[in-house]
Length: 209
Image: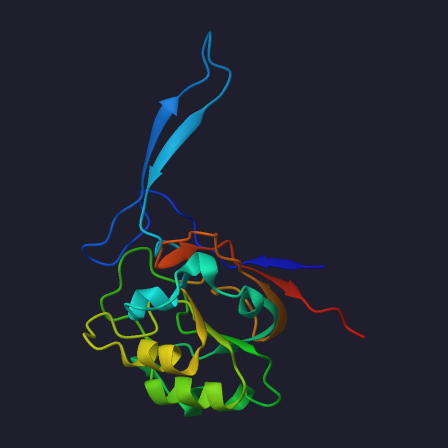
C-alpha cells in the first residue's frame, strides 16, 4: 500500500515563527570506550515541522496536546489543492472537491513549500473553517506554518477551531501529493503540558474495492 510522508525534515535549518525556539541538538554521550551509546538532548518549539496545535495554544484554559482525543488524527481524509489561491483560502477555492467529504481535510497551497520562513503564508479564511465544520469535518490541515496569516493578532481561524472543537495540523509537506482521498496517520506525542506537538504525518492510499 503506497505511503506518502507529508512531514518536512526537522533540523537546525527548519524555519520557525520569528521569536519562536529554533531546533538545537547537543550530544550528551557519544560511543567511545566505556560508553556504548550515542545520546542527544533536543531544544525545539513544539510548533516545528509538521505539528498539531492543542486547544491550549489558542485558549488559556484549553486542553494540552497530551490530553486530546486521538481520533481526529487517524482515519479517512481528503487532500484538496488550492495552489496559488492565497492570501486566504476561500470556500470557492475548495468547491471542486467538496462532495461527500470525509472528516479530515488537508489543503495544499504551495506549488513547492518554501525552505525559509514565509511572512506572507497562505491561510484559511475563517468562514471556510466554519463551513468545513458545518460539513462534518473534525480536522483541517494546511501546508503552511499557520491556518491564520503570520501577521494576525486575533487568529480568527484558530478561534473558529476553538469554538467548533476542531483539530488542526500545520506545516504539512504536500508538494507531491495528488488530490484525492487517503488514510491520515498523524498522532501527536503525549506531552501533558504542551501547547502543541510535532507529528510524523503520513498518508496511505486507500485500497480500491
